[in-house]
Length: 294
Image (tube, rainbow, N blue to C red; front, side, top):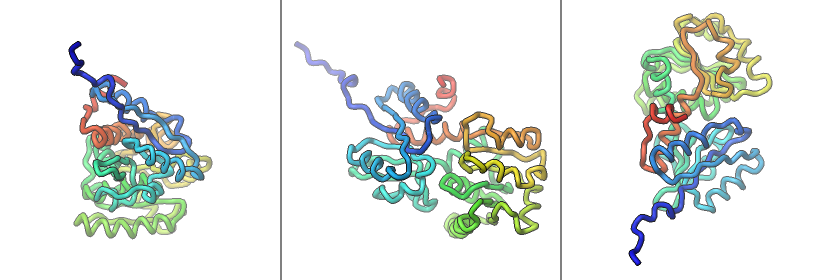
């Protein structure tokens, strides 16, 4: 009997998934499994929805099973640094990880694909570059770190970070000054709490070119955002909410008619998914092909 030469059907699939909390809404499993079909790659992507108290056990279990990789979303983009062996240069600088990969040496490496995906999504949605733009970031968590790094790297003119916990915003501001030196950037970074104690903080809304909301939707968070002088935003400005569920988030609905154009985080999700898929498989799926299938 002739030996069968094609054993692709019997190859072990690459097992991957997403770690987060309250992520039943996540489109990542659909997106990655569709990319697997498009690229003819045997990759299986699931969802690891775990509460904070068992995240260390769950993630270490993932590592012990030697699964190929994972996406990491809120609230674990910073905490996951405690459980992986080493980081890409960009992830180390940012201090947040959204993609983990089992490398050839058998160790797990953390990457951050949010930085490039944010830049690409701004260009895709608004047709603009970040250079010389005045940007306002709401939030100071793992996602905001990637957005801030991208803005500094691309040469934004002025960036204001607003966060509920002002000390966290200050800490991010201090790290941003280090990033500026490393990236040789002339960006000016400022920070504030939602009380906008400085008059200049309030006036920043008038000259803001793009406002980015990275605050995870939760009870009371939107009421806090509404307390800001959003009515002062220029009608020529742009707004992005990195959340994509619902498609018209309360933040974007509130700004409807107050800005030139707005977008949710779906395109950013797609761009970062494409980069993560490439890290795991070495194959890059075209965005237009992926969108048509979805």
